[in-house]
Length: 163
Ligand SMILES: CC(C)(COP(=O)(O)OP(=O)(O)OC[C@H]1O[C@@H](n2cnc3c(N)ncnc32)[C@H](O)[C@@H]1OP(=O)(O)O)[C@@H](O)C(=O)NCCC(=O)NCCS
Image (cartoon, rainbow, N blue to C red; front, top):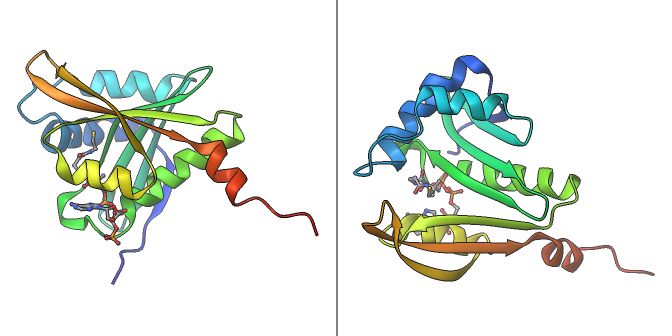
């Protein structure tokens, strides 16, 4: 059964838990750069959304979206390992995409480690295209893949047809 969860913007008191999730679920082997202080700055930044998926025990997933003039960049995103493949990641991405479209932004950009086959499969399933392979993207030692998605193309494809 799918877990019940809601998505909301993070508050300052969520910073520690989000930073811990980044350390244990995303930045493994790269050093801890998204410290509680840095997450707190992101939460307070008016150009950044830190969204969290919450269930009964607390935060089960989060996504950080940084709004630029022409695109949204997703620097950090994860779901608790025990609750994957239950739609939480998709719900966070859909939340971010709807927010971006409401703000008039039609492109999303993000990266994943080349060896992160789970995340790459996830992004492809949600309509993201692998646009560039970059050796040394992560601290000069690990290759990464750049992804992009045209949100307007998808929105127009689903637009109401004239009678
Ligand atoms: C990537 C991640 C956020 C996906 O979260 P999730 O809640 O498991 O994703 P969903 O349940 O919404 O998956 C949606 C679809 O994506 C695809 N998908 C997700 N995980 C997959 C996997 N491990 N292998 C293949 N396809 C996968 C599937 O098509 C899935 O639909 P299905 O379960 O009906 O087949 C999660 O795997 C994660 O936290 N990974 C570690 C951190 C990370 O890599 N973050 C992203 C890069 S920074």
